[in-house]
Image (cartoon, rainbow, N blue to C red):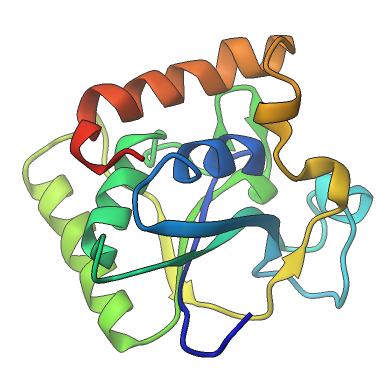
Length: 179
């Protein structure tokens, strides 16, 4: 990828869900599922799924800040999963499914913390946000069969039960930012 691209890296449970959400956002040109935040080099799904590597299932996206500001990406992130659940999203349980923002610079960190604090202050959720906000580290791209999972498996029960409601929430709350 060219070095002039702007990146955002988020973890909000299973990366199939997060990828499906952000692929529908205007100004996002690429969404890659993968692993970050852990302790071993070159992890694979089998390593991460056990919850022992410290990695989170995450997505790293390339976006154009002239089309969509980072703050709006953070708001979509918070608005399309439950950031109050520690180390889980629904039935996906373990630190690999944690809610996390991996910032790429100080400006991203400031925005992420400010939005989190605003949402907590407004009591947007029924409990405090537990999303980790930490520096982006090395990102490891997931195996090819994880890419475009929602698009290639729309009739799979997981897609219908878990991902479809997130897409519906995206359409309901963030219509202005959809492709």
